[in-house]
Length: 269
Image (tube, rainbow, N blue to C red; front, side, top):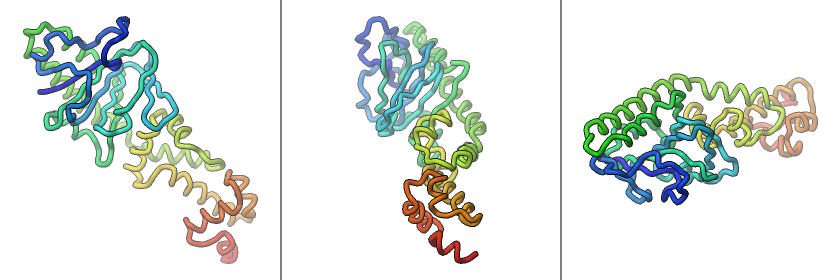
């Protein structure tokens, strides 16, 4: 098994930062330390061990996201998480790289079309396993290998549990969108309400519904506009009530979605 790892702060330039996984003789266990990701990995896995709360920001986002101890981030090369930034000096965690072709089934955890996953570890058991492996003496090869295989087995088990718990995620998003149909929402606002990253929100919703979450947000607002039209409201009243920038903007979106204008709908009554 060929697994690479590094600490979040890479070169450990700050001596105050503890090295969670030590480099001492780890090559003998099939685990090698690296300060670079230029090894054509199959996937990455990040584990937070900060007793406080680390903050990570993904590529293309302005918002920092807080992650508690034991949060597992599993992601493929090229995803936004590969370029995450971690502020501050108190960075504690482990970054594992599973080499392509030797990922031990970790790549099978990804649903089709999904580049990264968030996995809860409320008991912080994942981090404890890796820390115990790192603390073993160099000659404890089989004990270290056993610990790493235990880590992978628990990862698969936890992911199956979480997938069962996550059933109905899109329903919860739709419910929130319907309750807030009277004004436009941004993806950042919606992700904050769902307590996940923007990218993961988009991936998970599209996986369940087959359409982008913001497209569904617009559809729900247009459905509300149609109901209001049938109840006798004017297009101007509806545009103001639902937060559209203008009656023209609402009419154009309405026609594109329903293939008829608000005026044509009114005439059918």
